[in-house]
Length: 178
Image (cartoon, rainbow, N blue to C red; front, side, top):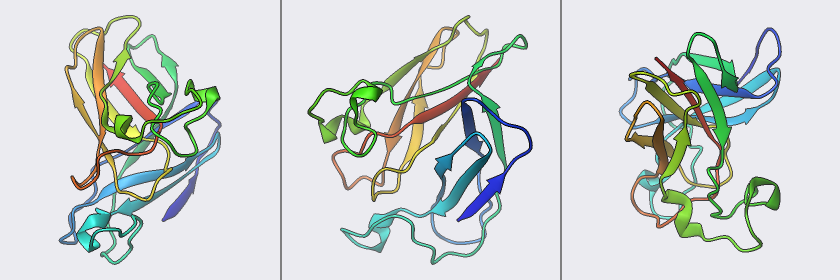
């Protein structure tokens, strides 16, 4: 992995990692493992089930890849950009399945793949939405998928490599712009 300190501080930072280069043969996604007001930690993660049932994510047996990244503070900007981070109310287990994040005492692991609706305020004409998981609470590879991007909202969910029935609660980071 890599840790990046950035200039300035962000009260509620949202990090979006760009599409990685294709130097190796494995599918991979850039995963954010930590976001603070002054630094981020990321790594290139390959689908763990490609290494066999029960394998955990974080494999580093692939060639080096390059990727871009951006950081923006949560909020709504005069230029039309909006950004935020949320668990979306998903209570699927793991360290983020807490009362602070809106989860009751019990968690349902199978809800980890449910669609989460993100609203824009104000609406954005012809929005482009980008999302990235901002946390790393489980042992499985995961990335985001999106649908129904509209002026008032879009939907986002987690996707693994198809062998599991759920995923721990994670934080969805998102950026939308006109």
